[in-house]
Length: 274
Length: 283
Image (cartoon, rainbow over all chains, first blue to last red; front, side, top):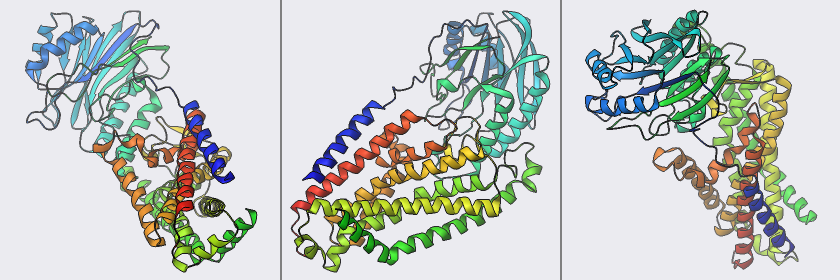
């Protein structure tokens, strides 16, 4: 009898303990913060999910993209998977002249990165990385001070080794500029770092992405980590990296209701104090 | 109760399967050493260096502590549950198969005490297995790979979100913690196998059923179709034991999952006792 009582008592204690030590569910996103900020950045891959015929951005979605940008009022936006300059011009028209922008040079692929900046004095810089092109925009922040340089990047979706080579090249380029500017790197890096989602215990793909991500974190800070997944299927593949010595960070949010059509990414917004 | 435990321990020490489990684990360490050596050589030199400019996979990363960590994590998922199932699954069903269960139950001891003593012996076996495996890995790592700090990176092993490091002495302590947390997690399997051992009269059936349930939940938990079911599988909760290898141990979460696994273990044991007490023993 005492054995059953002992087991029952232990069972009860374990249940009580499990509830007692249960952590309140961590808030995946912080929608607001009291921290004052001087720079608001956004990144958004506006392309479509793989199941579509054309996975690049669709013109019919541009009004929704423009509306969100106008509502969020970021100082600069990094966009990925545009079809080309005509699409960017259409978007700039929808933004009613409040933003200036440029599109990256065509690399090996059929899609382009772009940067939009609210500040009219922005300068756009092509960033060659292997066979691809990222795009940079340098501008003055609201507080004056050092120049801000935002890079819009898009790493290979299918090959982790290529992503690693791309990341190494991009970080080398950014590192050279970090002496004179506050460098931010935003975009879709396609890092698959959630090993629980992998069917294997250890894969070369996870290792390459781990190498790439760890390499970036040697020099930059992952500003969007607290906001959680940025794409469907619980993936956090869109990032905004900033200088590791940033004074303060404010709002960090993934706008999960923003996707339209068959978009598989959501915009990531971060606010920082310079 | 103590006498019962001693008798069960004697049976365990006389069983060939007890020693076989240690032999197989030693062979696994040898296999891991070969895999680790060849992998480290491939990834730190030759083509790897030509293809990529920057790497954490330096010779410093591939040290004995990293080797032990990988080895323990891999075997915990694939190998240790099998031996624990074999040990626990044959406890009652093995007696039934050899025709000694009826005689045991005619002795002036309660069936609940019998179940508890058999479970305690299984728990001891599980802790010895894990303890032996960890120590063997550390010794082999020290001799054949060399020591350093334990460096952790996001992605592989899924332990950290950002690169981190645990200093050598602290890391050794963490392996000690892992022996405790890992044993506690394995007790869920032991309790399940003991339940199967009471329900089925054949030890093979009990062991196969336990491993089938474990593997089914483990695999289903990794398939995206069922990701919403994942939190309800005991295999997910059992994973808590690895948290001791995080640079900052999340104590609250660790205690939470310790209690969850404890609830599974005691709940299954209670069920086992209740079924066994009502069981008509005809073998």
